[in-house]
Amino acid sequence: MTDLTVNEPPMTPTNLYSVTDARELPAVDPAEVIFEIRDCAVDYGNHRAVADVTLDIRAQEITAIIGPSGCGKSTFLRCLNRMNDFIGSAKVSGTIQYRSEDLYGSRVDAAEVRRRIGMVFQRPNPFPKSIFDNVAYGPRINKYHGNVGELVEEALTRAALWDEVKDKLKKSAFALSGGQQQRLCIARALAVAPDVILMDEPCSSLDPIATSRIEDLMVELKRQYTIVIVTHNMQQAARVSDRTAFFTTDVDDAGNRTGRLVEFDATQTIFTSPSDPRTEGYITGRFG
Ligand code: ADP
Image 1 (cartoon, rainbow, N blue to C red):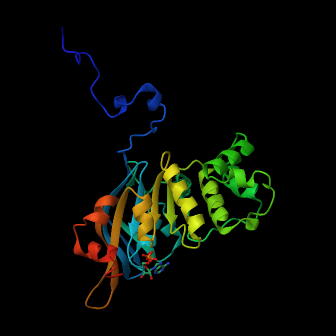
Image 2: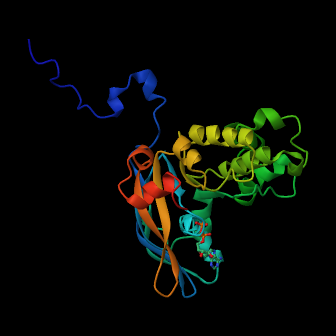
Image 3: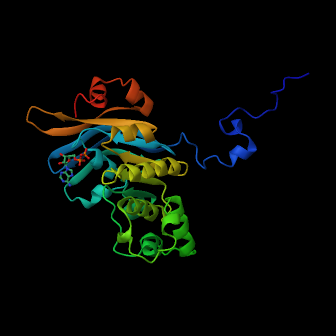
């Protein structure tokens, strides 16, 4: 008898799954690096708000950014979809490659960047329009040629909101609860077929039940999207994220405060055996 492995394909992660399971596999390699960030810094005028950020963000993971207030978490997050372009004094340096392309390259269309890399904010910010029109807004301005009704239903379903709103799509978005409004904003972001979703403290204005629904939704969404979340809630980072970046603020002799990345690792490692004493101090509540 010959060796049974002869002529077998090599054992790659994909063929470790059965055919049935394979249909559930993500479309992209989960190890794929979506953002390669090297020495990223942001200055507002002559204030260096954040510096020395070097990390990779991987496909279909939730990457959490934690750290004390003012350490540059939101500033850094805004670098990832060029939202800092709207702040006149902001200057981004270093390199951010998005799917191997320089995100700040001269030929890159920043509007297209923001379509592919959507953002959900701290406070739900629905438009003063109906539930339907909030979700349909992006596809319409992008001149979507397909069936907008179907697209709206799909986005609301993915955002775990469809069942709650399907009978009142024409009602104002403001008639929804805060948690529902936030899921509507997530549906609005999903409706333009993004690749990445950035979330800047998406639960900070929500009660624990609404927070828990958004956390469940994030875990569900990462099957298809890459998610980066800024949170001041360490339990939330520990619950939902795969990797965590801990930032803190350095103060120089002149009193200038600059946020820096201290440590970036698997969330489990950050919360159980961090390598930097500043991370340990923060997660155990000794400072920050
Ligand atoms: P965090 O999200 O960690 O609380 P931020 O990114 O909001 O931190 O802020 C980091 C630093 O950048 C702070 O010193 C803040 O005052 C400053 N900053 C943030 N946004 C602006 C802005 N639009 N213009 C000038 N300075 C800003």
